[in-house]
Length: 573
Figure 1 (spheres, rainbow, N blue to C red):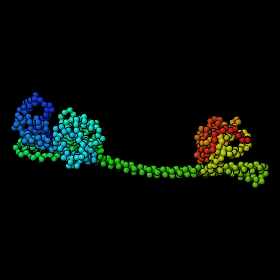
Figure 2 (cartoon, one colour):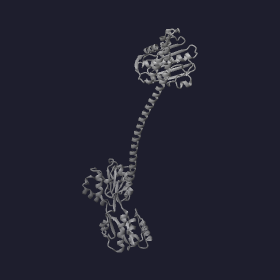
Figure 3 (cartoon, one colour):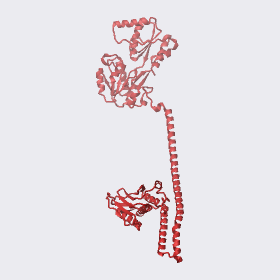
Figure 4 (cartoon, helix red, strand yellow):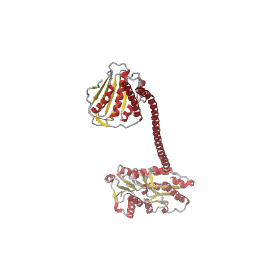
């Protein structure tokens, strides 16, 4: 109608009415219908445009009381053939019949070599004509043998369709009457016929698409309206009508349901030229190509920027880590040099006393003084001073030099014997203190026996000195070696006054003498370095009346056995 109004323009007043041809018969109804037309259209119309075969039928009644009205009928080829037989073709325009050849060609391209079922009712209106057109088209394409016609009642056809394999192609021809003598209206009958069937249905009539049908032919209404307007104006003006074959191209187009195309995996490129897609859902990239390209470009730029930034950050991080390691190494070297400088200063200061003692004693011996000093006493003093000097120098060298431990595997009993031999000399002339050594567990230990024994001896010496400076009843130092499969634990405990809080916080720092009368303050610092070189740890637990130093060294052997308490061994005092 839009095309008709556009074509007629302001040259005529357009009045539109939709009327349906009666689907039931009877003399009373026929009389009522004619009375309605006479009362409504008292004045004659200039032009009466009729669409479809049904409208043509009631247009015949209108002509009975207004024969002067010009009529324009748009009918199919079937209806036109009937009119020609009645010698009444004035004012008719041919709407071309369905293009069966093009439709069959498309179906065969989608399902090559497959049997094509055709739902065809020979008793329906127009079925004979459509059947002939279908046969001619199939024989032209050479696919007539592939067609399998399905007929009968609604129930019979439905039963045959249900027996078909999934996805089989089925062609629905026009004018199928359907069940129980219903009117030949496919749009009413077909949805019930195809409901719930997973088949590829194709329509063959000029109506809109049905739900669940892939393709059919729809009428392009605007084109039809323009054509009718052009022919109608010629009728009004008395001009000669254009021949029917001048109309046809572009009046009909194939229509396909895009949802079903996607469901059956059919490419849009296979469709006939000029096809119409119903329920069309364009692909995202097709609909938003430039937007997608812009987003993709931005994402690619961000990705490249991120990768470049990560590479720069990684390189800068590696550079910072390297420089940090270099700075730490330099700082450690400077701290070490600073410690060495301080140690040399302290060593020079501390060595003055024993060296002066040695010089004085040597002067007395060589000068043959008449003071009457015992020569043996002088020699003993010189020996003590020499031992003290050597001890200071040894501590200083141990602290300055960083030597990897020489790990060796010995039995727990053998290691305990080494400790006894090192601790025994400390007990000479020390009748006032008791030193006990205990071994818990059996097995092998892996450690540097020289360095670890020096650590234990240093701890024992510190404990004895602390007990000597305090007035403690029954002073006792206990050395306990405990061997397990995971580690070797060595504890040195005493029953002295304990260590003050301020002193405990800096026990293992170098050059902290903790209030002792002599020494370099390197003993515990050296002990800590020796233990850490074994990947071990040293700690101190102190309280009033008790101090315990604990050394834990990982056991790298599998020979350690379950702990078996043994009797403590007291060293002779």
